[in-house]
Image (tube, rainbow, N blue to C red; front, side, top):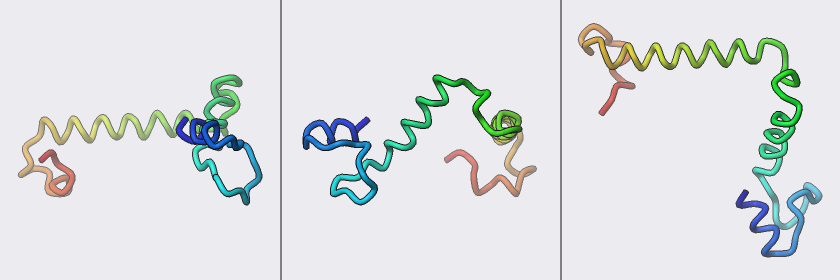
Length: 83
């Protein structure tokens, strides 16, 4: 959003050429998020949602494991534990 505000203030376009003076690095990300919101998740590559669900489940399980199991039993997670 900051790119569009800057573009408005400097009277330039965030959708300009790739070799412009004021680049909009987040414009592509926001455009793709808008396309995903309009077209839905059916526009994603195959197995993308399954991978997202798997990584999310792993992250939640790893955080629960760190929270509820003593650190003496988890030497591999000792570097990423809570401070």
